[in-house]
Structure formats: C-alpha cells, structure tokens
Image (cartoon, rainbow, N blue to C red):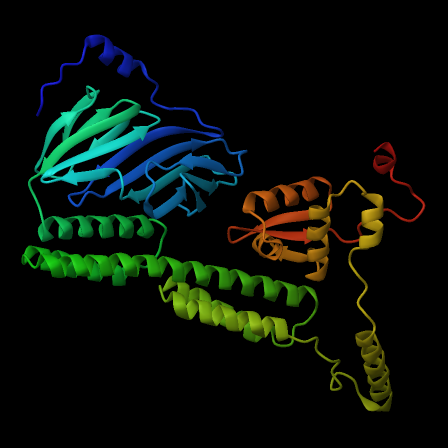
Length: 426
C-alpha cells in the first residue's frame, strides 16, 4: 500500500467533519460501499427521517443505479422513484429508511488497475473484495480495518479517489459476486416474511457449482436465484393487493345487506389467505380476485315465503315484493349532498372536490391507492389532500392491512338556512 504524505492538519480537518450531514427531512446514520471484483459497487445507506415528512429526496452516488430496494425501520418496503440523480422516497410517517442499490459507474479500469471515484456527503466505509491491494488513496483514511478477508477504509466526506488491484479475475470473481448479490437480496426479502424456498434452492445449486469450479454455471444459477427472488416479491405484492381488494368488497357487501353470495366470497378469501401463508402467491392472488368478484355480485336476499303461512302470509309477501321492486327502481339516496357540501365549504380547492366526488362515485369509500390512480397524482399530494379533508371532518381514514381506507362521513352539510360562518369569514 502506498505511503501517504498528507499533513496532520488535513487529518484533523477530516476527523472534524460531521458523521451525519443534515438534509431536508432526514440525516445520514451510516453509509457503506461494498466493491465487487467486477467493478460494481453496492451502496447501503441508513437514514433517520423526520416522521412528519411525507417524502424525502436522497442523492444517488452514481448515474447508473440498479436493483434499488427501499425499506422503513421495520423492514417494510417503501415506494421510490428515480429523478435524475435523486431518489424520491415516499416515507409517509417512517422514522428510518434503509436504502440499497448497485452503482455501475463509480469504478473504471485500465489494465489490471481499478480506480473508484465517489463524492460522499458524509463519512463512509469502503469495503474491497478479498485479495485486494490498495495502490493509492487521494486522502488519508480515517481508519483502516479488516472484515474477514476484505480490507475496509473509513473515509471522510467529499471527493475521494482510490486505486486498487484485485487478486481474482475472470469467471471465478464474477461467480462469487453473483452469489453474494443473490444471497443479499434473498436475505433482505426473507426478512419481510416472504417464502423464498425456490430462490434459496437455486442459490444452493449456484454454491455447489462454484465449489465444483464450474464458475460460469455458478454465475448463471446465482443470477436465476436473484431473478426468482424479485419475481417472488412482485407476486407477493400482487397477492396482498388482491386480498385487500377482496376484504373491502366483502365489507361493502355486508354493510349494504347484500348477503346472498357473501359466503362464497368469504370462503374464497380464506383460501386466498391460506395460499399466501403457504407461499403460493400466484394462487392467492387468483383466489382473492375471484372472491372480490363474488362479493361484488352478491345480492340482497328476497323475503322468504316459507317463514309465513296461509293466504294472509302470501298477500303480505306479495306486498313486500312489490315495495321491494319499487325501492329497487328508485335511485339510492346519496350519503353525501355534494351540492350543499360544496356550497357550505367554498374554500375547498378543485383537487379536494375531485377526491370527494370520486369517493361519492365509489359508494363513499375507497383505498388511497385507488384515489391516487384515478387522479394520476403522487402519493405525497394525495396524502396531503386526504389529511386536509380529514381535518375538515369530511372523511375518515382507517388502516386495512397496511393501506389507508378513506370513507366519506354521511350526511355532510348543515341543514338549509343555518349559514356558514367560515365561508362568510372568508
């Protein structure tokens, strides 16, 4: 390793820089860069987030980021969108965020010599592959340590450049890195409670091929294991959404008295939950979708003739059927008088009014995700609209399996002639 000729003053200045660089709504707790033999760099960031922030913008260290995984402090996945060199994360109440991704443009190679260049906002740990020789470092490291067979440097914030050579080249190194990446992804998803028996079995095959020095086969199997792991994640997400939709449809059917056919929907929903617990996410999604359809088709039962007797009973039932038919022909009385509500609350903006009209069209209730999709708006925008309507007493919000379920309060608006003090004050 090269002997560095930096001054003691430079070292003291580096040590005095803060570990956490405050950003808008969040701060860094740790930043680790894991370098692989093929030049890829895995970035792992732990952030402390202000819970009142609906979203944050975290800078990406490279221009080319892949395999982005964002979770909260409990390991639950969060939504993230890349916007140039920034990652916009919908935190929505999280107090911590773990951000992981692979950068493909932090390193370059000339012959056997690799060079890593990075601009970091905070102190960070740089971990190299096994059998690596560090040739040159642009600044004196704050710390040098060993992590098993790997060398790690703790570097100060700012622009850093490190040159190194690795002792492993070619298919063996590529296979080792592919196995490591697949194992990390599987472990992260397993922490969310997913059934990953298929990807794990494929990863075991990759390890066996590596031990047999069949490195190209080992790399291929490790990449298949990684693909299976992400496919499993997507299938589980689809199954969860389908189960939530079926649960909401059953609740609406029961609330409206449409009990004929609900038993079939509830049975299908129970089977969907069992399939999800067994790890058969595709079957769980299919059963939940069928249960939702059954709940939406459920009907209000007709009065029973067998419960009544004789001619008088028959006449009573006939009258009941006639009244029932007439009531079916009459339009249902709306739960919310939109005209009166908008008249009494003229300060509502167009976005808030559209959300209210959408809920009214959905029989008064809908998931926040449905509202967002209907208006084609970001999560943070819809969240603020719903929060404002909740503060106004227009809607209520409850949690259903981790999602916001928004319901219009019935009988909105004061009786005619009462006046609207707030409107007059405005």
